[in-house]
Image 1 (spheres, rainbow, N blue to C red):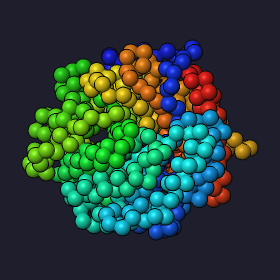
Image 2: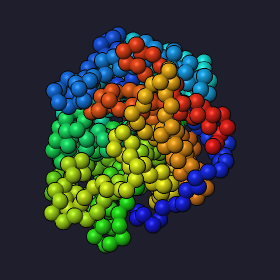
Image 3: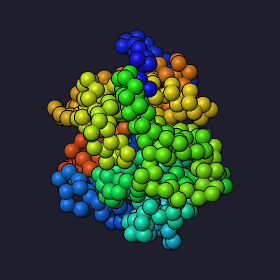
Length: 461
Ligand code: FCB
């Protein structure tokens, strides 16, 4: 999608969202729970990876994180006080099944049981993600997502979680951002488990998709009401020269269509299959897999932070997170940036949502993550994070513009409720609308949290 198709955004005015629009916040287990060895939890690939020297900023780990495992009543109370209506959290697979298959850990199930009851008691709808990157280490020792068996184990685990929580949880998301699991985790070594071969990235991507499909079937068989999956999608922006447009199409395939097409059209995009042939013969795709993967879903979760900006650059080496992307330069958008260095371009969200509605019609959308890290300062017990408020304001306006253009957008979940363990960046990057002091575990709602609560109350801006 090229730049000239971007929608004009209004920069002021009152906007109201559709009735019943879901408003909330999101987190993930390894990033907030801590209690890494409590109550029978098994080790995950992130426990191992964060202990591998040089992998995570300053050697940070999720051992304690926000101690949410013990402080969840306080965190739920904060959401209630802010008026949030929905909370997306992830279940830790190694807490439920310490080895990823076999025996179930009842104390792990008890924790999510208590959390769900606490949420419902506060009038907050739980939205469950089953896999937000914390693969049980025992499964990784057998190849992790490069091993087809992991997909089957994932479906068993989904059924275990649903059997305990399904009477109170309506919305189930199988995977969070399988692109990251596959290409940051197995192709480029940036995330756990830190493997770095292009072929493994494509193999893992397929087994993640298969895991999604098998888990979807298992969830449906146990009576789950709404099943979906969350992808990290990015519009790919380029200049209009044919070579630049071709570069954008390649990256769109490697980032977006490689997941969207099998999930929503039941097939891998031909150009991506062709491009990856230099790494793999795709023999990991077996008969029947694409029917399983392409089974209908009720909701597509969209995580959006920033677009990709690319240009043709003959001679450029491939970006390791996009195997097959040689001859393409990344970055370069002339826009203000967050503390992550990510360009702030709200119009990309409008473009993305409108494009999804056009190319993949019929699947309701929910923004399951959007937000920004900034170098927050606590002054007199207050965080005046105007840059985050303006980021959120801009992206909400962009989401509204997409609805006006016909996108079937059902909700918005801010990333994140709390400052937390930002993967390879450790605690160095703060995405929360609530500040966390990691020494005292004191929570301070930032100005953006109060502002967001007001947006929720008004159902608009
Ligand atoms: C997404 C992840 C989430 C968080 C945000 C900033 O890729 O799903 O856990 O790290 O980025």
